[in-house]
Amino acid sequence: MAPNPAPPSGDSAQLLNALPHPVLAILPNGAVAEANAAAEAFFGMSRTSLRHQKLAELVPDDSPVLSLISQVMTRGAAINEYRVDLGLAKIPGEKLVDIFVTPLPQVGEGVVVMLQERSLAEKIDRQLTHRGAARSVAAMASTLAHEIKNPLSGIRGAAQLLEAEASDADRALTRLICEETDRIVKLVDRMSAFSDERPIERESVNIHEILDHVKKVAQVGFARHIHFKETYDPSLPPVLGSRDQLIQIFLNLVKNAAEAIGEESSDGEIELTTAYRPGVRLQLPGSSAPVSLPLEFCVRDNGPGIAEEVLPCLFDPFVTTKVSGTGLGLALVAKIVGDHGGTIECETNARRTTFRVLMPRYAPRDGRGASRR
Image 1 (cartoon, rainbow, N blue to C red):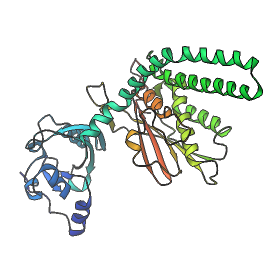
Image 2 (tube, helix red, strand yellow; image 1 turned 135 degrees about the vertical axis):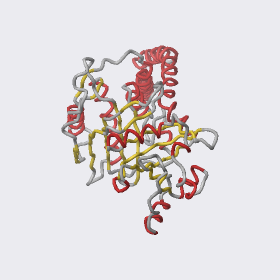
Image 3 (cartoon, one colour; image 1 turned 90 degrees about the horizontal axis):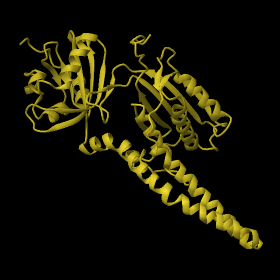
Image 4 (cartoon, rainbow, N blue to C red; image 1 turned 180 degrees about the vertical axis):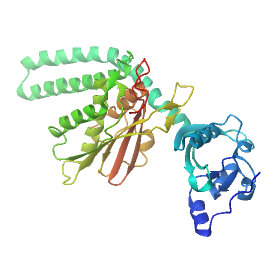
């Protein structure tokens, strides 16, 4: 085996070792050229030992990381793959990781590999939470619709009959009964959306037209006081989806952003962005292989952010940070995105919260239009 390059300088080594995620530099022949401290812990061996092995000796022969490295070396472009079960040759069990592979020109045709480990709990949650929660709410909605709406109509009818002969003081109480029954019916109707299992009629949709429509609706209503910024990729291919449901997704996200900013804010801003990410592939529930989700749509606001303890269950039904919220909006958004074969994630910190929707692109059945441009 050809000798590995000289180790990095002291400053470079310190920088690599400061990174919390395992980082490896891989030569064209598969040998490990460099590794940081996190990689030593991940693979359970010293940097010196790692530099005397090939990556193929550290992972199983069919490991997805080997395939990704081969693709990056061939294409000369970075590829990211998320939620990959990565087995190690000398350590039993599997680790759930995000894999980032990028070319490294200064070492011939080698690459840099970064692994971001995810916990087992996150593996289970991310694979099952959104759709599992939606199914649970669907079953609950069907039961509620039958068991609650019928008695509520009887209660409302009785209150209306009493109102005709009630005094002014009692009439206020009968109106309260009617208002509260109407509120419960609306809540049940919103939950009923989760039980709609009819196939989605999808077509080629220009996402920029959807976002422009959502912006116009917002600007004449709940977001009149907020500045909108658009950062669009003009060459973005169409998305395969339902126009009405896509509007529902982004109208909900923009409304949440506006409410997070608040009516009193004088510098509130919502940024709508679109981008093409050809290297993004995710292992989604129900799919045997990673799915390509190159279309990225983001709704970003400069509100105060979301509490860290809420993030893991943000898309669960009945989870809300609003005083008068029902906690069904984001759960329904996650269901619709999942029904479209995509995924949604949230990143937040002070003055910057981003909801990122990743979706497949539209591909005509005759195969035409397969390239981006």
